[in-house]
Image (cartoon, rainbow, N blue to C red; front, top):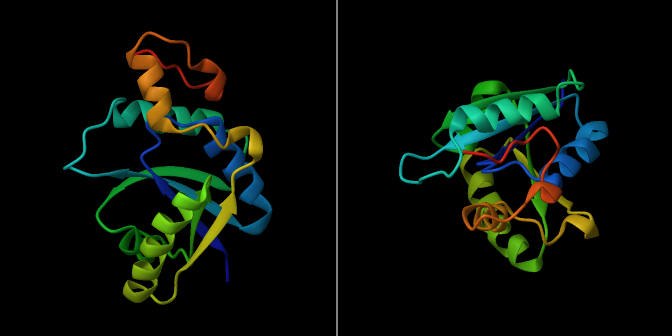
Amino acid sequence: MKKIAVFPGSFDPLTLGHESLVVRALPLFDEIIIAVGINALKSYYFPEEKRIQWIKKVFQQYPQISVTSYEGLTVEFCRSVGSQFILRGLRTSADFEFERGIAQVNKKLFPEVETIFLLTTPEHTAITSSVIRDVVRNGGDATQFVPPAVDLTI
């Protein structure tokens, strides 16, 4: 059976931490689907189309990586694409506590799915999409925190 992982997130914007995590996860899976979650109750800084375009550009040299968007429960998306794994990154112990609760609920909703946690590399631990958005909103240069393909202009 093909090992398919879904890496869900808003990627608002995609960071060097996201990129590193996906590249490091490649040997573990046959396919990784980067799934841009769309939540009607949440407002995003960067448009969905732009976020998807960035991700496709960053990972264009990896045929085993695909990008799509989805709405609704992540486990239902996993079921629809035949994924047995949800890939998540952990920067801090607070991330672990938050992600553990979600993983346990996901396991109840879809017992066939396993959540796989990878630790962020030390140099990317402080990088978050929300910090990058704040830097951009306030006129700062956040390009050092994102892959070169990510154009942070609105």
